[in-house]
Each structure stands twice: as structure tokens, then as C-alpha cells.
Amino acid sequence: MRVVRTLDELRQARAALPATVGFVPTMGYLHEGHLSLVRCAKAENASVVVSIFVNPTQFGPDEDLETYPRDLERDLRLLEAEGVDVVWTPTPEVMYPSGYQTWVTVEELTRVLEGAYRPGHFRGVTTVVSKLFLGVWPHRAYFGQKDAQQARVLLQMVRDLNFPIEVVVCPTVREPDGLAMSSRNTYLNPEERRAATVLYRALQAAQAAYDAGERDAEALRQRMREVLAQEPLARVQYVSCADPDTLQELHGPVTRALLSLAVFIGNTRLIDNVLLGYPGGVYPRYTPPGMDARLRHGLG
Image 1 (cartoon, rainbow, N blue to C red):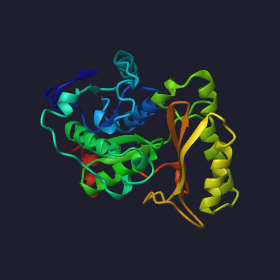
Image 2 (cartoon, helix red, strand yellow):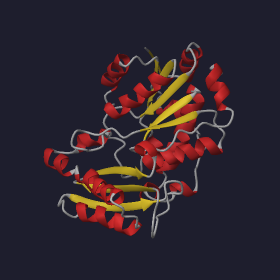
Image 3 (cartoon, rainbow, N blue to C red):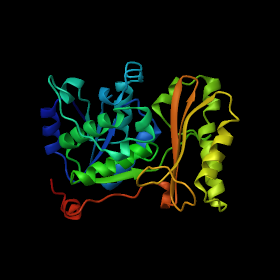
Image 4 (cartoon, helix red, strand yellow):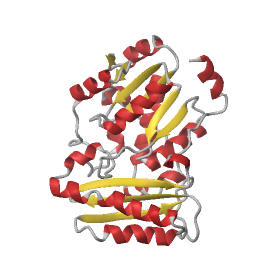
């Protein structure tokens, strides 16, 4: 496994990789959720590249950039055990050189849900992922359904900017008690960790209602609120039943829906979601026009 930091090192390493190349962008402090993406990439591609970069531009002024968990040595051990070919660990100076002033913005999809509570967050995400794509130039890129809005925004970005990259969204990986795996789970003390399971229990309650025939959007939101209200440590920021494509709130009868929520447990903000009406509960793979030939022949 080769570990590179600069763009020159990355381009040399990338040029030597056999096609096709799968790419998994991460902010490090890896857990089984990240590793599941690596395994998906490994199964579908001849080579796998992983990036580790805590992206400062997607953190707000009162968020946890400085305290975000980091353990590069441990991450590298885990990735080597998974058979990753190249790990790119750029510095902020590589990604945002002095005088930097260019941004990538997806408009409508980033104004709601997470975007409404974290101004500028998605501008940082779409910009850094664009730069990571241009550095690695993969055939396929892998993201988790756990960050559903991020996945939807990046699917839109790839389509709008004609990136010749297939986007694969993989299922959320959960702890045995249902809590979605997240690097921020390490912030929780034992009592908070127990309480954090309420997010998935709320989603499960709404999904069970949907599976039993409930189709009213507000009734599904109310079912989530009722479960969350039973946990004293939960402070709800939002509960949503939204159109999976537009991310706008639904009203009246629904056929497909993205159920999502953001909840503070103590001082830790957690998010989770389930996708109703989609096979496997994930956004479908997006293959850009003309991409089949690039994948079939390993071009580029």
C-alpha cells in the first residue's frame, strides 16, 4: 500500500494503478462503515484508492473541526489489511492553497434538512469531493446511505458537471443495537450511547407503520416524534419525511420517502435515515452517459 500526500505523488501512484479504479473519500477515524465501502470498491475494481482528509470548509464556526477524532496510524493499518492500493492524505495547504477562491455549489438540494442548519456545509463537501475526484480520477466512487443528503447532493453534482464517474451508494452499517456507525459516536458517554439508539428506533417505528400501510407523510413524522419524546436525553433538531429526489417535505399520501432526523444526545449531534420505496433502502447507482465504455475498457 502506498501512502501519498502531494498531488505529484498521487498522480504518479495513480498512473501506475491497473484499471478500473474505485475511490472511497473519508475524513478518517475509520470504522466498519468506511471499511464496508472499501470492500465494495475492492469487489468491483482492480485498484482502490482511499483519501483521508478532515475538510475544514465543511465545518461551521461552532462545529467540531479541532476536536474531530483523528488516528492516522490506526487508519493506515486498517486500510492495509483491506488491501487498499493507495491512500491519499493531503494537507489543507494542498487542497486550499493560498488565495483559494473557487467553489462548487449545488443549489436547491442543499437549502433544506442539513443545509438549513449547517450553512456552507455542502459547499465545502461538493468542493472538496470535486477536487478529490480531479486528483484521483476514479472510475467509481463509493458513499454511504447514512449521509443520505450528502449522497443525493453528490449524485446531482456528478450528473450536472458531467463527471465520468459512476457513483455507488452503499447501505448504512449499524451497531448490533441499531445505532448507525459514525466517527462522532466516540463523543458519547455510556448513558448517552444507550440513549442514542432512539434515532433508529424512531425510524424503525415509522418504517413499520409504512410497511403496515400508513402512507400519510405527517403521520410518519409524528410516529418518529412520539418515539423520540420517550427519551429524556434526546433534543430533536428536525424530523423529516421528504421526497427522495428533491428533498422537499412531503404532505399527504406518499409512495417513496426519505425519513431522516437530526437529534442532539447531550452535546453530540447525530443523524440517521431510512429510504422507503427503494430496493435495498439505498439510492440507486448512477452511471453517467458513455460511462459503460470507460468501465468496460478501463479507460482513463
